[in-house]
Amino acid sequence: MNKTIFEITKMDCPSEENLIRMKLDGISSIANLEFDIPNRKLIIFHRGEINKIEKAIFELKLGGRNICTEQTDQTEFKENVNQKKLLWSILIINFAFFFIEMTTGIISKSMGLVADSLDMLADSFVYGISLFAVGGTIIKKKRIAKLAGYFQITLAIIGFSEVLRRFFGVEKLPDFSTMIIVSILALIANGFCLYILQKSKSKEEAHMKASMIFTSNDIIINLGVIIAGILVHYLNSNKPDLIIGIIVFVLVIQGAFRILKLSK
Image (tube, rainbow, N blue to C red; front, side, top):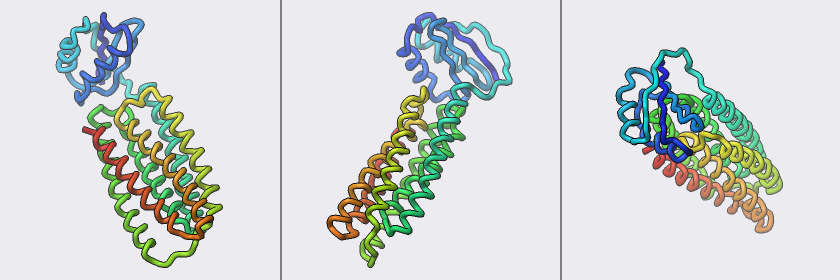
């Protein structure tokens, strides 16, 4: 691994930082970027020659100057360690609620909870995949986002088929109180996950944006299951529960297409 330090004399604020990040987007040899705006320094950890990176920086005409290049054994970066801790926390929360919602969904005969549990499982896999992207190149992160998008589409199609099967079959009335209580707990958990994701310094990266899209979808789904539980009680029908199951997978597919757009 090589470490190259640039002096960027016209880098006065985050707008120049974003401009540099966009310019260097796509250079696969870059492992990490560290910006020191007060001292107008840019530290680039990269593999191989610096020529292509240097040319891109000079083209910005921000007064870029290569100060030095040296070899380093550093492979872990502070930003990446923080990302890993954040993603591990969200993965554990999602995986725990997969078991909770799947178990309570089966016991209460609620397709809405079962569908939401599968969405939680999908998110757990996505966050697990994202952990492999932390510290990788921008291209690698976009590829991870694309894989996550296709995974969500596949799971949504399978789930949608199951909802239709139950819709035209004979099913018992789900336990509305279990639907509401478990969904409220899941709503609180997803709200916390979205909060810590939004506070992340790396929230603009493709795989982190994908994580926020998944979590935002989860919050909408939780609210939908709560409403469905209320309607199941007042209408004495399982149709609201099955309808929310269909809506869940439609939202999952929409989120997946948004993520695929990010990966381009």
